[in-house]
Image (cartoon, rainbow, N blue to C red; front, side, top):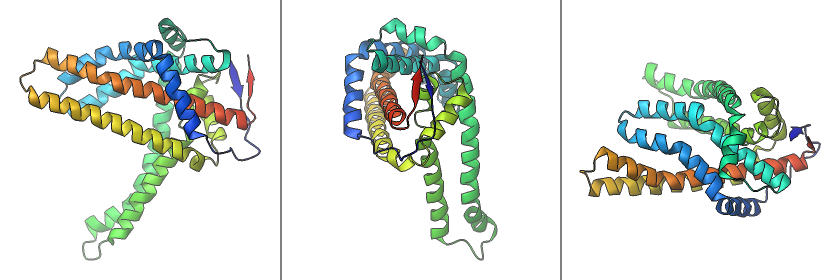
Length: 276
């Protein structure tokens, strides 16, 4: 299955957020044993190792390394399974997630590198927006920048990052729908979402709030448990971490399902032809 995109002649209609979220939730529950189970299994080593890493920077690097080199292809396998389910009605199995994802191992690496390069440019843009206010506060103490000046730079930086994340929100779905490679997938994603960042904002905010709540509750509950049993061994801590990893994995699969459905909404209304 491959997608050939052309810039839409008309603006993309508003996303039916409620309908898409309900469909994504139903997909996640109905096929959770295969989709969530496959993702959770590949994340078990991460859940076992991460409690032993105390340094936040090392933990962040390990998490990024694991996503790029170990578990990322399984996430793309989930994308492929849901795309196939929506196109052909073929229910995914546990092994399908790995079988369909393994072919995207190198593409996942290249997409992460490409996305990182683009994000560096966005970060540079944020620095340019924030630099005048920061420079005035640090080197010109007689005439420091007013608070609103720095706040305006912060808001502009936040808007820039949000705009970029919304524009590229379903790039992995495009990658798994027959794109020739990472660059082709990113180009098609940007073409599909051109002028539609505000259209994506409601569902982006919804997913962001839901993910933040699930993360907060899981982290808080895990912290309370560790406080109550401060003599937990490392083995017990690893087991607890695995237990609280499950809702995060469930949420991740739900987000993948949502992004696939959003992509299909854009593909339908942008006049994309599906081949193969």
